[in-house]
Amino acid sequence: MRTNTSRGQLPSLEAPPVADPLERRPEARSYRVRDLVQFVDEGKIRLPSFQRRLCWGPTDRQLLFDSLYRGYPIGTLLLWEHPAPAGQLVLGPVTRRVLELQDALWVIDGQQRLSTLSACLLLRPDQPGYEDHALFFDLEKREVVGPSRSRTAGPRWLPVHRTLSQPDLSTWVMENGLAGDPVRAALAFKFGDALRDYALPAVIVKTHDERILRQVFERTNTAGKRLRANEVFEALNVGISGERPVSIASFIDELAQLGYGRLEEKHVRYSALVIANQDPTTPTPAKDRRPGALTGAVEGAMEPLRKTLAFLAADAEIPTLALLPYSLPVSALASLFERFPAISERNRQLLVRWVWRGILSGYLRGSSVGDVRALHRVTRRTESESQAVQEMLALAGSDRPATLPTSLEPLNFARATRKVVLTAMMAQEPINLALYLADGTRAIVSASDLTDDGERDESARRSTAGRPTRQEHVLLTGLKAQPMILRPRSAAESGPLTAAIANRLMTPLPDGMDVESVLRLLIDAGAHDVLASHGFDETCISRLRERAPTEQLVSARREALDDRIRVFTERLARWDAGDRPAIEEIFDEVDGDVA
Image 1 (cartoon, rainbow, N blue to C red):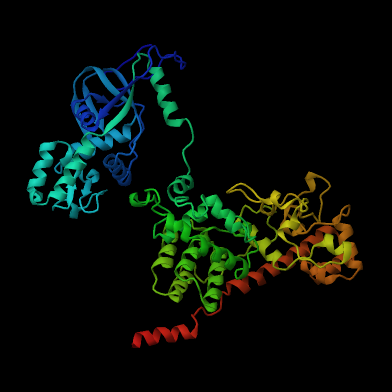
Image 2 (cartoon, one colour; image 1 turned 90 degrees about the vertical axis):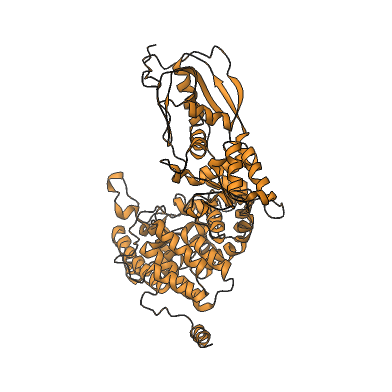
């Protein structure tokens, strides 16, 4: 294998990618922080060319030093002992001219940690990069804090870079008058000792085969699976006391007993973060990453989430969580119900308008981070319930959309518009035709009716956390029930009308009967009201009676359903209605101003 290390970087490979086993087992060592930083300063630490760019931000750096102070594990370094040429070392903002070494330590895993340690401990205020990497130890709160001009002076803020050497730290203590404050002085020395003497475990690999290093790097950085955001959140904040459910999945199970469907894990997590006045669209601040920091918010989200689901079902007329077009209303409403548990009837009506206007306009899609943040600010910071509702309505807007969802859309509920169509159809309270034709029972179709295994034990309807229940799965996929009215004889005859929601009946049928037979029985029996519950208006019924071509029947039903969608959404969005708060609330505000 040919190598070229004139630039101080690992060479490109010209040998086959398969590497032999290591001749010697890796060696375990331990290095103090002071030693590692000195290695960087002297050029003993080197960085291979295949290392990724630095991606840590201020919060990551802050957490690293806080972990050093508290003695938390921060992982193991993986280093390669190998000769290195003279040249320039660049490790984040730290640059050094370095000499040739025979026993340099090349960083295979640990670049982010070593770069952070070096930048925060070696850089001084007059050097480039210092302002971006400056950290301080708050001697009153006893925590590491980020850069701020207000923290560069005074006895409360200890600059981290002054802790690298004991003499420099002693000078800072004297300069800031802490000689007469033994408590703060002792804490400053304790912090400095904890940083300098923290021992990082390291594994040293010795080999001349560069391919091995590349394979080790690849496996170290890609093997396994990272914890998802909700798993990290749950590990830190749920199940601390044992008095409440021990996982977010348990919270979801408890809420699922309402019969409205299963929340996603992100709904609980986002709601807890908003209730804790945190922005769910950004990384959680350092102070809230500590175990149990948000446990109270998680538990406090339970009752607001319960109220939210009840509101969506009863007030907003969304029959199941699986048909909620967008998820943003969940955390916003939970935040609002947490602040104002007993929302007035008038404001509940206005919130229904907010939900449906936001759905139909696409505002509640939450595609803009700014929109999401603005909405959550409203639910947390407004002074009164009415003010919050009024500002929520203003954010959603009151302009009627140019077009509405149509039943010509395919039977696929992955898109919000298709969920709107099905919700409008379910609002017509379609009668279960299998039961009606069997014994005249006029039962309304429910989610469990839309499957062919509705007689299974209730336990079969449950699912693992985060996955749709059997009922919800049927609604989302539309694979089993929803028989077709127009059934093409070949793939060539299929078209938009065949795939449309308008071509489906949202009901199970009696065993052994097809759609044509069922519709003929209903016409002959004069069951026009039953047909009407499934979206057949007088025009459709006339075409059924006249045995018109099926394409004409489905086209007429599409028009009828679209008209019902328009009426349904108009009733709930109330685009042209006045949105003022209740009269008594206006008088309360006036009285308050006068007082």
